[in-house]
Image (cartoon, rainbow, N blue to C red; front, side):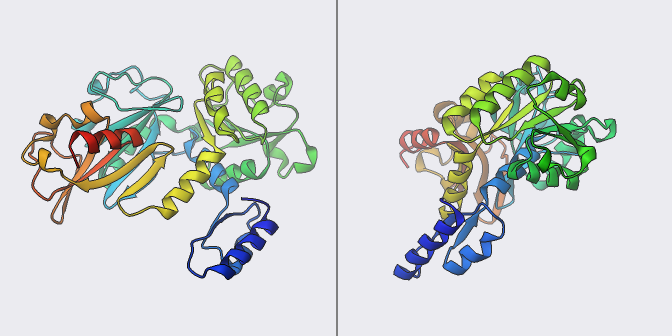
Length: 365
């Protein structure tokens, strides 16, 4: 995780000692990927690029549907910000998402904290829904709800604060998706396309006014300094209570501070790297969706065979949600809670690491 030149040296040395050990390296420059692979790296992670793409995917704008975060056989796990949709303020039971669309809400993120919802959980303005379903379910959901996130037709630009490596990646993603944007940048030497840049300090109200802060649907804060990101998040939130604010965090300990300052979504540089490494080294039975949130599969314990999901109280007791059951060659996504669990069936669950431990202990797996 050092500079590209040092990473190459270390990789080459380790590969000399072992031909088979997996070596994962980070690369600051896209041109370093080939060199690191020649040195013996098994996997090269360009974290700045991954971070920029993740922030862009979360931004409300363009024709944006649910953000797919994992595929597990035919099962798709996706996340979708409730902001701006008719879902805000409703109880989960009132949303009728499962009945009308076939999609299941298996979790809610509330300013960086994951919770397992029940029927009475209220969908808040800043809630992010964790959805589970098939390709068809997700397409049906997007057809109804992605409409509320479309700002392309209004022509109002999303603000990108900072034009470093992360900011430049976001610009590339917005161009591909047809999302209008303006980059606020202090350094005039970084100016690329004059019509898309506002030179000035994002803490200066005059700069923000030139960037149309009063109409922007979202702002993405990308500087490499967490103190600056917290400062700007607090200021932008004071100016616009209804705008989506996304921020980069370089240190994990500052994620909660950024949420308190008013950020709707924070992407941690440290967590991003940890998740990427974990999923590369994972076994086939578990995958990390976000820090502390996993999707995993296990054989149905004997204590659950013959009982329905409704009778098992898995969600209430363990804070894990059963999102699919495989019996033989058939995968039932969002299975009927009244159907009994068969012998030799395989359960696919979503939950935190603590929830997984509770499941193993409660059902004596």
